[in-house]
Amino acid sequence: MAWALALATLTGAPAAWAHGDGTPKHGGIVQTANDLSFELVTEADGATLYIEDHDKPLATDGFTGKLSVLKDGVKSEAALKATAPNMLVARGIKLGAGNKVVAVITTPQKQTLAVRFTLR
Image (cartoon, rainbow, N blue to C red):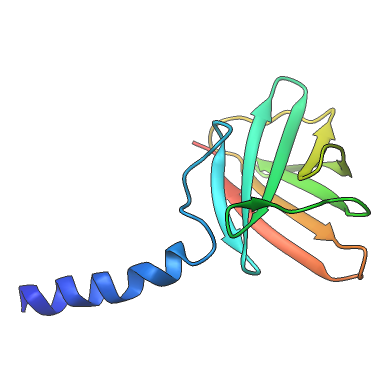
């Protein structure tokens, strides 16, 4: 029975690593969605979202979006704006431990991506 559990664990692991190793590169929280890796880094006046495809920065030119934060039942939002090659930045929003965060991003091709984070 123990070997079956170990085999099941190892069999499922490559799918989790398929689009990056999930290790934060900027001190944030990493989630995978739509075959991309997203790292949310909280800052004093907002947050930065880094996007990678197979451990390579994904160009965010033309991307737009919204960062929604839920804290104690109260929702706040800020626009996500493309800055550096693989970054989207939200300003004027406070994030802290226990917050639930959703980034909704629209690509230049009008594809909508959503990724969820829980801050610890």
